[in-house]
Image (cartoon, rainbow, N blue to C red; front, top):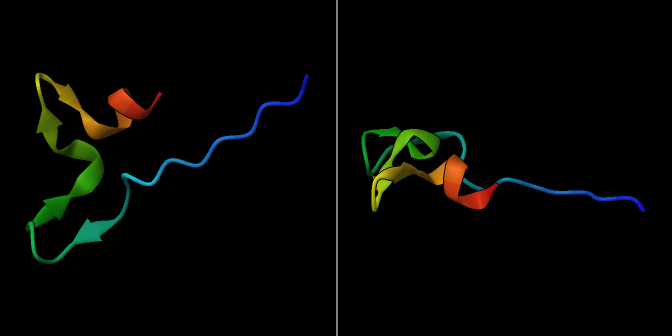
Length: 35
């Protein structure tokens, strides 16, 4: 079985002022939620 994934919560966000991957939503960072 091959499993591939792309995490879209990355990179600098100029409007938010910080990296999207480090944003916290309901107690977890966005990269943790997408895993």
